Amino acid sequence: MTSDFDKLEQSLRRATPRGLSPEATARITSVLRGETAPTTPGPFTHYRWFVPAAAAMAIITTSASLVLHLRVQPSQRILDGTRYVSQVAQTTILPREDLGLFVSDSGAPIEAFRYRFMEKSVWRRSDGKRSLETAIPLEAVVWVETPVY
Amino acid sequence: MKEGPSPLDWSDILKEHGSALVLYARQWTGNHADAEEAVQNGFLKFWRSPQRDIDNPLPLLYLNVRSTAIDLVRSRGRRSNRESAVAGESDGVCCFTGGIEERERDKALESAMKTLPLEQREVLTMKIWGNLTFSDISQTLGIPQNTAASRYRYAIARLAEVLPPEMRYDV
Image (cartoon, rainbow over the protein chains, first blue to last red):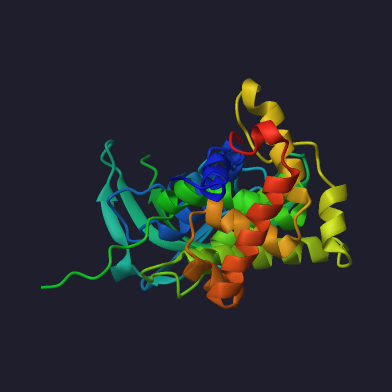
C-alpha cells in the first residue's frame, strides 16, 4: 500500500522545474564546443576560419616561420551570435614544417596554421544584464589563402 | 580487454540535469536569471574540473553549481540573511513550468517550498528533481547520509502540512 509520504513524493516529481533558456543553453554549448573542438588542421572543424590574405593585418613570412597578426574588431562575430573575439592576446609562431598546405577549389594554395587567442565573451542574460565576461584561451585553425594575381 | 568508463557527454548531462540545477541554484539566488547564470558558471567549472571523469559526476556538478550560486549572491552584497533575500528578491518567474492548468499548482508549490529552511530545500531539490541518492547528497553537502535523509523527511512532512489539501497528493 502506498503511504501518504510516497504519494506526496510522486506528486512532487510531477512538477517540472523551469529549465535553462535556449539562450543560456547555447552559451554553455558555445563555450564547451570551443574547448572540445579538435585543434589539428583538417578535417575542417567548427572553428575553421577562412581569412583571405588581404584581410590579415600583417603576415610576416620567414624561411623558418610564419607569424600572422590578425586584426579582429570587437564587433566581428565568429561562430555564432553569442561570442566574439575582443582581444588578440597571443599569436603563435610555428615552424613552417608544422603548417599544413592545402589547395583551395580555385587552385590557390592555402596555408593552415594554429592560432591562439583569448576570447572574451560578454553575454546577455534573460533580464538584459551583462554577465559572464570570461577570457577563454582558444586555439583555432586558420586558413590563409594566398591571393592569385 | 576491459573498456574504461565511457567519456562523459556534457550535452547529455546538461539536458538531463539542467532544469533541476536551475531550481537548485534558485534556492540561493531567488530569481531565474541569477540561477541560470549560476548554472552556466557552475557547469563550466564542473566540466573543466580534472575530477569530472568519474563514475558518478553528479555530486561534483551540484557542488559546483551550489558554490557558484553562493558566490554570485555574495558578490552582489547579499551576504547577510540569504534566506530572507531569497524570499524577497523573486523576479516573479515561477520556478516550475507546467501548463496553464498547472499554474496555480506550481505557484502553490513554490510558496510551500519557501516555507522550508534552506538546508531542507536543497536536499529536497536534489532528491526529488535531481534524482540524486542520499549518498550523492551527502557527498555534495559534506554531511552524513542520515542527516540528508532526515532533512528530506522533515521537508516532505512540512510540505504535507502547508500545501493546500487538494494539492498535497496531486501537485
